[in-house]
Amino acid sequence: MQKLRILFQNNQDWVKSRISKDPAYFQRMADAQDPLYLWIGCSDSRVPANEIVGLEPGELFVHRNVANLFPHTDFNCLSVLEYGVDLLKIQHVIICGHYGCNGVKAAMEDHRLGLVDNWLRNIRDVYAHFKDELEAIKDPKERYNRLVELNVMQQVLNVCHTTIVQGAWMRNQPLWIHGWVYDIATGTLKDLDCCVSGIDQVEKIYRIRLSKKDWLN
Ligand code: CO
Image 1 (cartoon, rainbow, N blue to C red):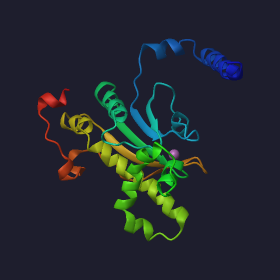
Image 2: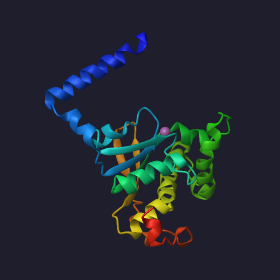
Image 3: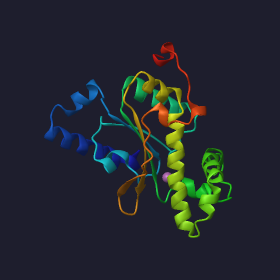
Image 4: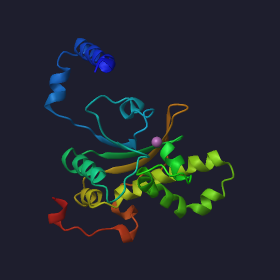
């Protein structure tokens, strides 16, 4: 506890600084949240979601895990997405990967790390799917960067293939799914231009015919 005293001190300083600029700040935060965006990013400590995009508390709904994955059977991811889309009515889902991602790097190697190897299997699947494109890239760093991008694009598709997103589109709720990459070395974001905003952009096999009853669930 003694060792963590500095964090409590930081917290007190932060509270004071917020209140000095805006006395009603915490009262307003306690009342409600109204974010327009859902951020799905990597747990990496160098990728602080709100700071990167200059958003305040209350403006960004955030989910982070190792290597910014959205496996279609992960209840944690699905619960966050459902809450964000159905209840908070967020309008943009941003999958943000980052260059230098250790999760992606581990998926390109054959060392056993532990339980996380099963999680990172999702990235090995992306590699296997784009093997020809990736192995045509001679420079290992460039190949690694490309896998970071392809992994983001795959997660964008995974989000689009959910009944949650397709239900929102069917009831004409505006919803855009974006794929971005953050460059830790420069602090800049790159848009991968793989934005999806409607069912017509989803491959047929992944389209789900939802009845009106389903949209409302
Ligand atoms: Co990472």
